Length: 319
Figure 1 (cartoon, helix red, strand yellow):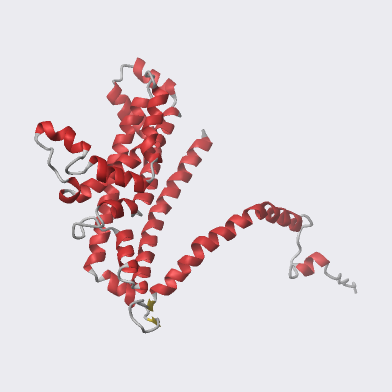
Figure 2 (cartoon, rainbow, N blue to C red; figure 1 turned 90 degrees about the vertical axis):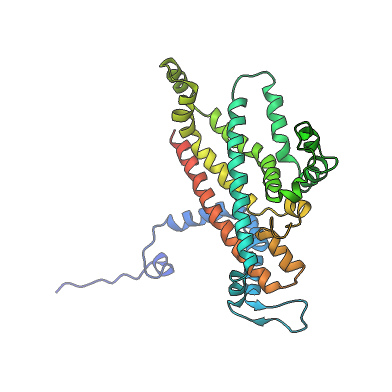
């Protein structure tokens, strides 16, 4: 009768719960953690600055807490979210946010593509023109809003009225009569350079031999742009539009400095409504609920932006 020899498990097997581990597995795992170690301070900073405040905002959104009342905060469940979603002000703010974001991004993309096509050509002073075009994007939003309000759109001394005076449009109070159009115009002025830079980067990476071959075959400039250039720069246009939407949906400073959300609620968007509820109504619970809703909408836009960005990187890596 044959004897069975039972060997004791090795230390590696005992350490892994009875599962045999390759000798180099633990070393490779340790090396991977060592490579991630330099990122640990940045990860801790992001958690402290973003995640912990968001968790606190979630907690406050479930509380019935108004600083104007002497009663302490009490748990209210989803009462704040129900009140927010049934409030007409939140629907107006969401609609204004959508209108502002869509109009500003769409017009900025169209202008950005046009300017990028012009600056992609060999023209005199191209470097100076590019520098001048980037200027509006580098101006602080508060300073830009004040400049437009007091220097350009002022009904008495504004430059826009001075230029339009010969055609009979020199007495317009643009901000009060066309508040949303004024905010959209300011955002377009600020974000057109950003769109131009994104599209210009795509145009400069385009294969010129393909354009030259199409030109030799008799293709007109409009046909070359529609069938060759536009499909090529489409990922860059989508990226610029999504990144612009990610920032414009959070617009606050321009509205605060120019219209204060008015007249009425004509320009009140979600960030400005949150400011009104939190710092004028002192309703911390309701303001936190509005903040959570705004963060969710921003995360949806950011998800599409990141997917577009990763698609561009994947396409560029395959070339």
